[in-house]
Image (tube, rainbow, N blue to C red; front, side, top):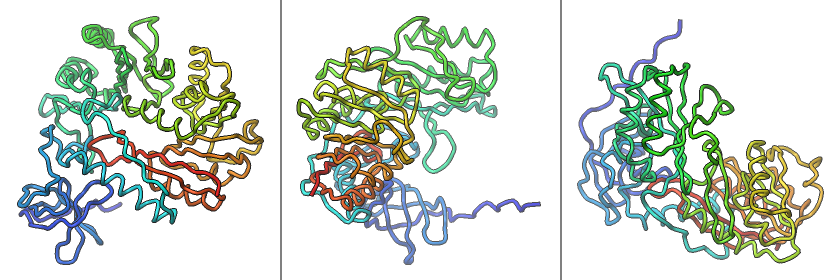
Length: 443
């Protein structure tokens, strides 16, 4: 029989520490008797009292309980649970300092993994600091001992749900509805079988996807329907995996949508589709990417990891032909539907696993004038290692992970490309998430 792991005994008295640096995940870094300690809610230059939350071999972890000497970059968080909730990690940090930190992370990673620096560091792209987030997966938990329901994000570095009644970074139609969502789940007979509610906002509608682990009775379905009618929400249910998500109300209504007015485009999407959560930054990011692509009439463009066509369709308004490639077949279909919906006939969408060789793909055997790459966190190493196949005269790389961007930039350097410019785009204010853009041209 395996031994049960003994619960770690931690000191309970607060300890004073000087914070000298900030980690990539937003924690203050200091030392106690020579051992590194990562402290939540602490900033460089501060002296704080903290309590230990974890002791490890090479480093320890802790949580700030009092700030004895504050940094000039410290501000009062808008959210009362900012120090506990895992949805945000930097609300206590002045927004300009957050941007400076993210730019520093990008440049450090480019140097560390790619051994290069951009010839030009771009001005950061910024937008609204609150109310920007249009999508979220909210955990749900019925606590029998308290006869209460929790709805929200996980606490930092554990699986417990933070007790929040309002989320300031979520769009208001969602961020202000936590008490009502809790009351709704509490009223359900299947309250113990609802682990998650996913929310998604379009320009003119909001949808919720209710995940349920057991069939819902007529009474519960009626309660969900009444709630969504009252608050003008589209209702989807998810009894199983992602492919089980189906719309319940309103019948026959169009999908969610967002508009790209500068390109006269309307993008339809399913609430479980990947879409950028920050619409203002997304629109400005598309503008920036297309400006750097500098598409000329007659050019042939390749958009890799294209999703539902967020960049593909704007590119198609400028280029002679655009080819979009995406690994998720549902998103490929959505891209084709959006192209047809917007009357664009110069764009093709293909489904392909872009982590594998693509020599046998119809799009993988010819050159393109320019390429846009927007991969997941794992990056695009297989693609960038074969740039000699396509011979593009410009590459614009949009990244959600500076480490894999830096790795791939190093590979592009080996392929004969130089890094013209790079910079950050603040898609997720008050978090350590770093969205960035980089531009490459042949040496």
